[in-house]
Image (cartoon, rainbow, N blue to C red; front, side):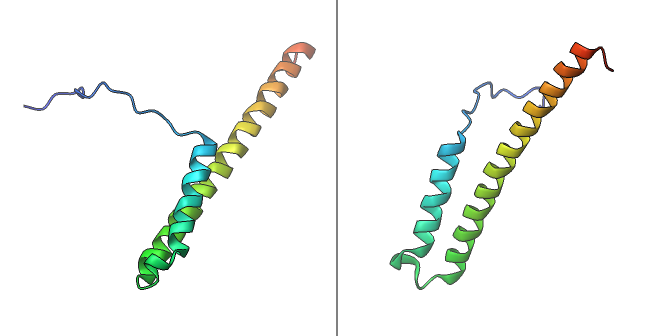
Length: 83
């Protein structure tokens, strides 16, 4: 019988930006290795996965930068009595 709550209570650790960048690099290196020369589709998939990871890392950096700016703006508005 199904329940509303998951029985899986184990939290999954999150990878850091440097770990994600290292993973992307490993995927890219594997795509370029001689081992996969006869598998061009797999090479393309590995390159695509590496590119997606790099884009997600960059997006994460941009979101964090925007959050810092927003927080500073909010504090400045509080200081000057703004909305």
